[in-house]
Length: 292
Image 1 (cartoon, one colour):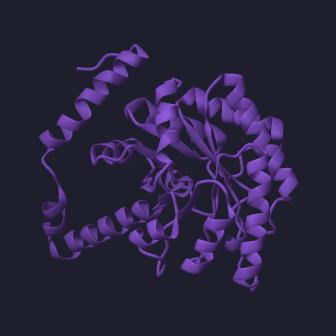
Image 2: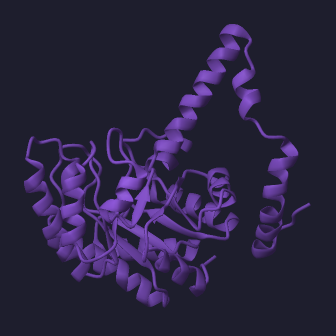
């Protein structure tokens, strides 16, 4: 079900200042993010894949992605942005169709990247990717909604020994092309932490809201804000952290009969019910189903 125009506009307005946009991988994580007070939620393509048993270097199918997005959107009341990877399509026309489906599923924003997620592989030619951004904008215009399109460029994801200065110049060049094609903002991150001074230079050069990922040994959240970043994602970090915490707890239970890690972190069922019940009932009304 398509989001309201007010939800689109509220999401767009968030980019006027710094904010953290957590990334969900299923219904429960999205609901928890809203419950914790965040004004919007994004999806993590890696996390969605993990939730479906898919390795992080392999993409889930377009249909699986759309289904997951629709499920998340049907449960939360905040805006949902979608990590659309490279568009789940081979052609601009295909990207336009996929973006239209994501809008109908309830999303208010998308991110489109100029790589296919394969480490070391060359990026898509900039003009070719610009056509895909134009296609996404056409889908939004056809739907009559102010979809927030984050152009994403990935030169810092290629582990090729090229200096950060050269990658930065290429990221800025591509950003100008993508913004001219209809992107509202730019997302730039890397396989390792991008140094703070490099981020600051890109923020200054790119005349649009700048988004990036948190990273190991990278700037702190407060430092990202000081550098001028507008939108900060933890990406798949929460998904991986959950795996690590549960792995530790399950091993402790098996090896020592130790339930302490579960007991320390598990809220009462009634407390979770209080969060889920109104959302479940609201979803039932929207979908014509029944909630007890």
